[in-house]
Length: 97
Image 1: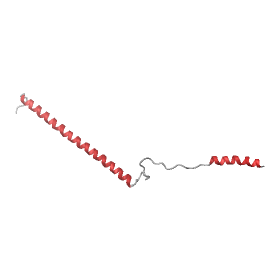
Image 2: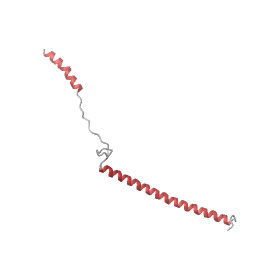
Image 3: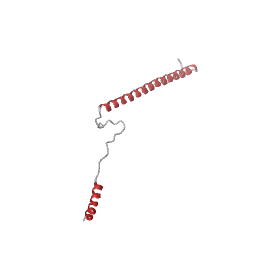
Image 4: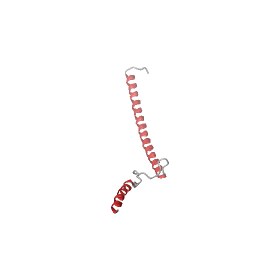
């Protein structure tokens, strides 16, 4: 009888051990996550985004100023060339002034 009891108990033990599940996974975050929901964000996330946006705007502003300066230089060069062409045509008698 003891033998029948151990044989009957063995499959039941294996069956319950095989069907048990354990949830041991931890919450994973990426580097830089603060744990706040993405939709609203916390104060640190909003402040960091504002600082990045400000830095990007400053760089774009500097690039625009450089382009404006280069445009002025090119326009001055074109004006000099136009004046030079006018001088050459006057010397050759192309215009009557």
